[in-house]
Length: 109
Image 1: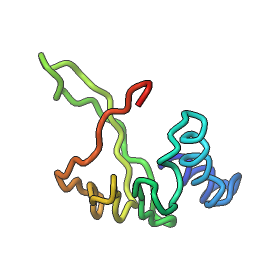
Image 2: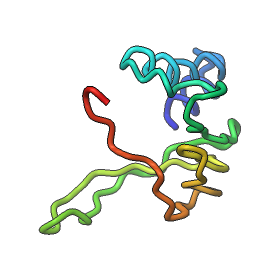
Image 3: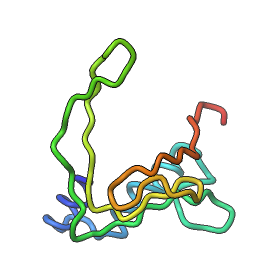
């Protein structure tokens, strides 16, 4: 959210397509995740539908939702109409849907 709101929209340092490439396909390629990072036939459908004019980060907060009430720092964002993971909607209108189609990626996967 910060990159898109601050460096793209407010400062104009990157174009929106360039920022998206830097946040998606470049890291996927660097990490060898060849089935992710761009919208192409045969790749995983991991998609964010973003409102470029309203994307922003929220105030950071500490939550205690870990075992033994251990604290965890989180920061949500707004301006995301939907997020899809493996083609399933996991976030819609800034709210989680409860669907969890993803999995942890480990070295060698």
